[in-house]
Image (cartoon, rainbow over all chains, first blue to last red; front, side, top):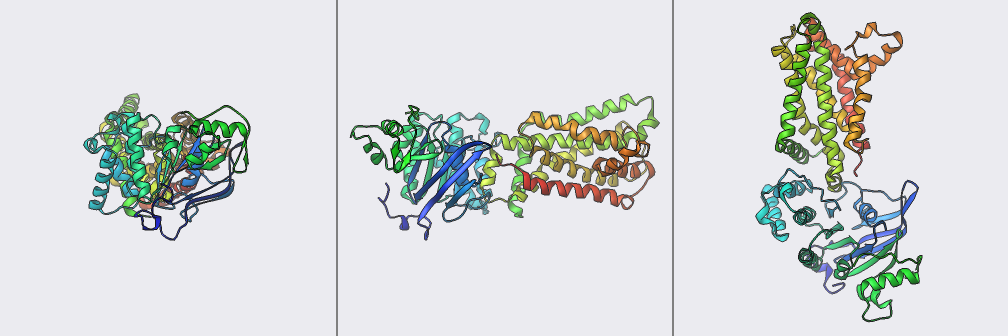
Length: 273
Length: 243
C-alpha cells in the first residue's frame, strides 16, 4: 500500500505535512534502566507501520513517547509536525495495551465519553460518529451492554472504537491484536487497511509476525533501537532466500547483527510467530 | 477550562458510582453506622457528646470523603483510563475539576448524612443555624476531596492509599482539638496544630454549633480551609501521574 495511493487527495491525510511521525536520536530510561537508545524513526502519512519486537524491547515506551505520555531524555519527537505532550492534539487516536475502559458504563457510553473528550460537542454528530464506529467494530448490537458483560475480544474492539471515534489522522495502537482470535485479527487488519487507504497513518506495536505481514513498513526493535527497517519484502530479502518468512528475517538480522547501519548483538530471542 | 468536558467527566464519575450498587450502599450506610456507634458510646454522657460532636463530625466527614475520593481516583490510573484521558485534548485542570465535581456529589451527601444523623438522631444539642454548619462542612468536604485526589497522585495502589490514612489523619486527630483542646496541648504542638486544616474546620464548627456563631465569625477559618483546598488541587494538577 505504500505509495500505492495518492496521500494528498486522501480524506484523512493532513495537508502540508510530509511525515506523520518523525523521531530522532530518542533515548529514554526508567531510572537506571535504559529502554530506548538513540532511536530514529520516520513514518510517512497513510501507511501502516509495524513496530515489531520481543517483550521488553521498548515497543510500549516508544508508543507512549509518541503519544506524549512520556518525555524523551534526549532526542525529538514530532507527530504531524508537533511535539506531543498531554492534551496536545485531537489528531491522535491512542489504544493502550490495557483496554482502559470504564467497566460499569455501556459500550456506547464509553465511546461517547471519549468522543466528547476529543471535542465532538454536537450531540447529533457525536451520536453519528459513535454509531458509525460501533458498526465498524461490529458491536452495534451490544451498544447498550456494560463492558463487564463483554468478552476480552469485544473489549478490545470497544477500545479500538474509542481510539477511532474522532477519525484521527494518526493512530497509535499498542498491541491491538493481543488475545484476539484469528478471525477477529483479520477483521481488525481489514479495518486498518481501509483506513490507511483513506490516508490515516497507523503505528502498531506487536510481537507477532502475523501482524507484521499486514504492515506496509516494519521496524524490528531490539534493545531499544531499530535493528532494521523496511517493507516486509525488503526485510525478507535480507535473508537471501525468496521463501523466507518475516520471523526468518528477524532471526537473520539479529544473528548477523548488521542492517541499515545498525549493529546488534547476536541472540536467538525472536518475536512470536 | 472547558465547561463541556469538565461536566462530562463529572457526569461520568457520578454514573460509574451509581452503577456500583454495593459501593453506593456503603457510601450511605457506613457513615450512619459509625455515627450511631458514636451516639451509643456517649449515651450516658450527653454533655460530653455535645462538646466533642463538632470535632467528631469534622473528622468523620473528612475521613469518608478522603477514602471515597482517594481510592476512586487511583482506580482511574490503575485501570489505564486516566492515561487514555490524558492523550485527549483535555487539560489536567479540566480533568481534576471534573473529578472534584463528580466526587463532591457523594462526598456532600455523606457529610450531610453525618451532620443530620448526629444532630437529629443522636440528638446532639446545638445553637447555630443548620445551613451555616452545612456550609462549613462543605468547605471541609471540598478540601477532603482534593486531599484524596492529591494523595492518590503519590500512590501506586489502593494499599498505599490506605497506608496514607494514619499518616495524614493521626496528627490531625490528635492536634486539632478533638482529643484535647489546642490550648491544652504541649507548647511545642501549638504551632503545628495551627497549620493543620482540620483544626480550622473543628474550630469553625465549634463556633457555630456550641456558641451559636455565624459564618461571619469563622471567615478566617473557612479561608484557610479554602486555601488548602485550592492549593492541593493546583499541586495535584502538576503532580498527577498519567500512568
